[in-house]
Length: 277
Image 1 (tube, rainbow, N blue to C red):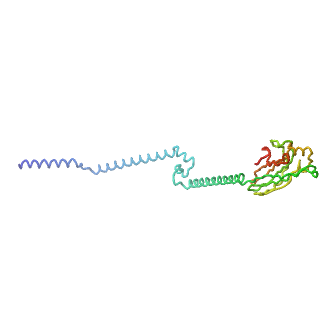
Image 2: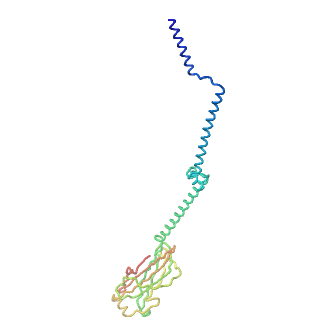
Image 3: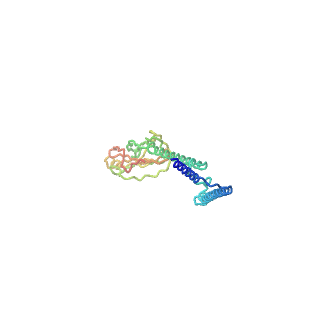
């Protein structure tokens, strides 16, 4: 029993000694240790040099690449095109952005002002514009004092909402040998333009008289007077007025009224004789 215990103890000691010897390193001299350190430093220096060269080559490639050349050609701030898309922008691009915003606002204001002016002009033209109408009164009956002529008093009235400035005026009175005037526009005279004569809005008026065949009374023959009473002729009062509104737009009023047999008054003539623009 003692012998077996002793053998076990000896074997255990040998095993423990072999394991510690396997894990331990052989002693190294100082020269060997110094050489090992030099190799390690050289390896580290070589890696550092390679990394530096790679970084320098990468920078050189970027500087000489097409993107870098494009940056230099376009003279971006600090030579970097990416700054255009970086937010917040650099001071140079901030000025560009603010200027663009001001320009957009200014253009918007100009468009709004022009639109308001158009609306105002349209309102004057269509809603606040003048409208001139002409109304005749019954003619004086022919008599010997007028040489069988006749006169027709008439009044031009501005029924619109703004002043009317009359620039041309034509009025005439004629006898047509038909029961009613022909439905075709008559040949108007060419009166000269006159200085602007204003008719006030909301009922401003101008009155005058129209004479048979012009300013001076002309004789009405006995046959014409007989045809009027028989309904074979009509006495026609017609003409036109040109006038301007407050913004200078030209308007025209063409008017026509007539008296048929027995001097019955008809306030409106054929369509071709009537116009309001």
